[in-house]
Length: 479
Image 1: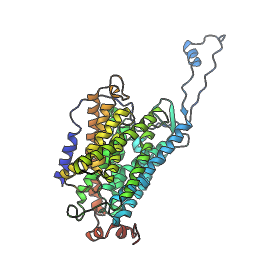
Image 2: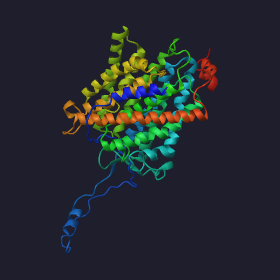
Image 3: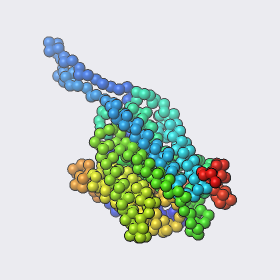
Image 4: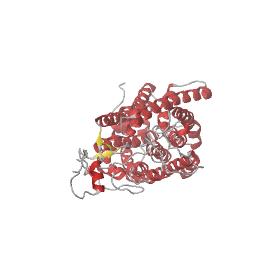
């Protein structure tokens, strides 16, 4: 088993090597900075010219307006809408997308796992996750416990945006980032679907969230984070969300083992209609995921919105064309999978590349993720039930590396005039490699601990019966 995991590391690591470095953190997620009250300072009155011995510095200070911190109601409203859209991605979007892909006897188990994992992580985010990821601590790998249980967070406390002196309420920043943590852990469910104990799923999610999601989020987006300091660009979560979750899922698929009958009998999706509905909800919700990461309702959000539209459309075409060329038929499942692949690939790049760059990223994501769920999956010899690594892992890696290319201003991106493609891609590659290794180690430890406490896999009889009735006492459909 470990040889297979090490072989996987070698393969994905090769995708991220061979470049040089730079520092460019303009588009990284700003860390939350608490301002205990909104400061709006009017211009001080000019000093009385007749007053004796007025210092020149004091005169200048009185004459110039003080810095004004603003909170725009439009930004706040947009962030609320974006947060709701991301929740739509998870429940019902991701739940239905996954649910339609499993056999009917496991439909409810997948819906239940996605719903409850998201709920569990939301509570843990409030208890300590937010503090460790975005608290006032400025460690390279982790924050501090200064905001554990959300202490100090009030209706007046504010968080930074990408514009100096423009803030949003800290509470909506907490809620928005909570949805990212929740969907990351829920994504992993697809790798071991149809065979893992419900209690094991929840315990693993809590452990891995603590050991992997929180540190990676801090390193990429938190104040003082190592990758943020190196200049890594991850606008909406290519490393933090997709590569992170995909690697954890792949390790789990190896450790839990293949489903009964895998490779010997057809384990076909039971309802592709629901999968299409889920994929559509994912696409709609992803506009909140990507454009919301701009934290303001302005041109930056519009750029991320447009890129999300174009890249996803390009990936749908790429996957469909690839299937047509290889298999002679373009499938609906393939088109839906292509949409998700495009969404994943553009996620880290959506705020810094131009529309034409986004289309290229989408095309690359569509073609390479198709290979990821076919050729690469066979090479790895793993039963990744719903192709989490093939889509989210490969798509995340492709998107992270191409961010370093198409952010260049000469290619339509928003990079500075001295932007170096080679240097930035090296930084992006470092972020990819760190995420892969960190997530894999954290996942291995978490699975081992869970196995010792409750066991990972259901019994053979339960797996044959189906998790819906055996675990939850319900059926998705009446006979």
